[in-house]
Image (cartoon, rainbow, N blue to C red):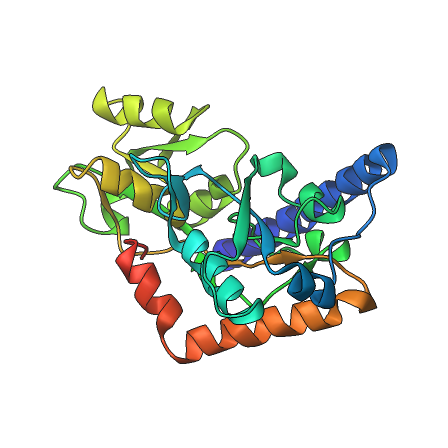
Length: 272
């Protein structure tokens, strides 16, 4: 029990150090680019008649392009529903801008979009420069495998598990499976190659991403235990002038949760 508590404290300290580091890197980046929070206010959005929303286009099942090139996924559904409720009843009253991970916050700060729904986890360091909505989905670290003998977490106690280099999943796997052998990989593709070549029995990563993997490769399955819980939120600008926008978005998401719409869409897209 003593070692377990020490391990938990060490993980907490690690998260605090990483959060502080990310925050200062982000602040220095803002100084270098001169970006300021200046997205459109609610009145301007309603006058123009549509939303500008940053999304992912390569991340099944949150935001991706189907075979016809149309954007699909949970976050796309959420953006359309917000457009319908905030801008006059039309789900198509939204213009999408596909973004890379590194640009998800900057496009909000640089007035290129009204907000971003692009698999952004709310963290204390990020909350110093942008505002977050109430969570629309709780992500977290899970494990994926195709080995039929692995049914629960304990079955991986002394097995080889692939993890992305320098990812936040590493301390979580270390905590729950201290005797497992971690195999570092540079990409999801490399992780799959490790499993296919029997160099690892499982892969630990975010549930939202691995859900898409299962849909693409049905021979794989997710283990039921989540190793962490991370809120995914809409990214909005700070400032009193955006209070109405933030309030409307938060109230809308709260309604979707209360009425079960977000839960239904999450299940539809195969999210755990």
